[in-house]
Structure formats: C-alpha cells, structure tokens
Image (tube, rainbow, N blue to C red):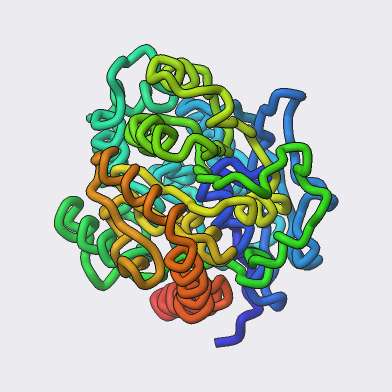
Length: 419
C-alpha cells in the first residue's frame, strides 16, 4: 500500500511536553513518513505564565511541513481536562475530517480523547490506539504510594473517586477500537487477561527514542546550568510528573539512606507538578537542602542536557509500561535503576544495561544507588550498554516503521471491508 494517506493524530499531551505520552507523540511524529499528511489535534496547556502552545520555535526542527497542528481546547493538569477535550474532539474532528478527509485516527489511552466519537459513530474510519497506561495500574500505583488522599494530585484523586466508571469506559473504548498498540508484552497480556481484548487486535511495538538527540554529547555543553557546580558531585536524577503514582514515596524514603553514606550526593527532580509535599517529606526525614533540588519543567529540546548531568537515573514507579524517560536516560549513556515491574524487565538486564530493584523497597533502591555511585566502572559499563540497547532495540526509527505497518494494515482492512 502507498503511504500517502492522511492521519488525524490526537495528542492530549503535546508541546510543551507534560509527560511520557507527549514525548512519545513528538518523537513518533518526527519520524513518520514525510509522505503522510498528519493533522495533530491537541490543546493549549496552562503553564505558570499562561497557556503554552507549540509554535514552530519549540517544535523540533525535524517536524516537516506535512505536520499541521490544530488547537481545539485548553487544559490545566487535572483529570477533568480530558472531559473538555473529549467534547471538543467530538465537535471538531468531524469538521476537520470533512475538510481533510482522514484515512485513520491515531489516539491514546488512558486519555481516551475520542471516546465520544466511538460512542456516537460520528466517523466511520479506522482508529489505532496506543495503550500507554491502564486505570488498573494507575489506581494500584496511587494506593501503594499515597498515605493521605488530600496530598494527592487532583488527577489522582479523580482516578480513585471515579475508578468504577473509568474502568467501564476503558473496557468499552478499547473493545471498540480497531487496532491497539501495546508498548510491552506485559501490556499485551494485561489487555488479553484483564480486559478480554482479542489478541489479534494487539500489536506489540516498544516505545523508542532518537539516539542522535538523546546522546551523551550534551555533556560537552559548558554553559548549561553551570551555576549548579555539579562537576564534583554525584547526581541522582528523577524525571517525571510530580505525582504519587510515579513512586516518589519510595524514592523519598531512599534519599536519607543515600545522603547519610554519600553526604555530597544531589537528588535532582525534573518534571511538572507541585513538589511542596515531597519537600516537606524530605525535611521530616532530616535531609539537607544541599542534597536535593527541584528544577521543575524543562522543554523537550533541553532534556538531553538534563539527563547528561546525572550519574544515575531512577525510575521508582510501582508500574511502568515502556517508560520513555527510562529510554531517554539510557540513550544518554546514564546508568539506570528501575523497579522490577511491568515492561521494565523487558528492557533492563541487571548488571548488563541497568539495575532492577524490588518495587517499593526503598532500602534496596538506596543500596543500588550507593553501589553505582561508588563503583565508577560499573556505572560506565551500564551506561555504555544502555545506549547500545536503545540503538539496537528501542530506536524511534524502529518504532515509527512498525507503527506505519499498523496504519497500513488498519487502513487496508477498512478499505477491503468497504469495497
């Protein structure tokens, strides 16, 4: 089949990047065939200084002229912006379809931005959905990592309160979509066993990153964040939204153990969200201000430089599918540590290209971090093998090529059915 069809790419997370779905979307769009016409349907996200939008100055230079961006809604970071965006998709995507004649929709779960389109049958074109997360995983992670409902992010409160309804919608939505992309074998098994999704609908395509962008070369930048004076300090990096389900309770409990043995260590937190609760927690643990730093949000184009500041990258989440931030850190030749959950074990081989720890075991996590910081040879070996793993198995070029095959199959099957 020729690849000259037109895609409606619904991006509930886009530029400015907010999370893993945004990183996935941007990197995939960079590497899809330039022969496709791609219409990104997204929203303006509320940042501290107003609504952030992706002008061409923030879009990666590899975005071609075949990519068109349509803003149809606005959002702050809560669960409820999804509802507004879903109604906007129901209203605006049929109008865009009338104008551009889409061959296929690529959507994303758990956001389910096109769920109302599925309910209404307003469009009769195939849909491919990437399953980035499941509400079961999110709820379990929140309950494991939270001690006080009031301290949760608003989106996490919404997930706990509305879980029965969300679970029902999830089953309906994923059952009605024509093709699903699962970023790990673990995800595929969960879809089959927990939601009764037919195996033939599911395509396992691991997430990927661009090893040319996410590379160790950024360490040569002498200007970026020089005021932090990090050259003589070991840096442990966390990248992700500042929410409970990302495993921050486990990481916070590990920080004082590491700082006690390595007084010069710096834990660096990068990501959108309110850090104040976790800052108070570190204070209660007796951790000095000198041992942690919250940098907040950084743009997509700055992230390779952020990763390259680190000696060790930590992914403490109680569940992960195929973490983009983990792959980005690996591409930057950083020694990585992740909880032995979900798809992490499909990426990491302990003592080969990274380390795994027992989920929620902060003592074991601390011991591994200390081991890596004290053993420079092991740290270097893991970093080198991590980058090699990304190049060989988890490149965005591989992800994009496999995604195009799913597009072709979905569009081809639909055209056969419709004659």
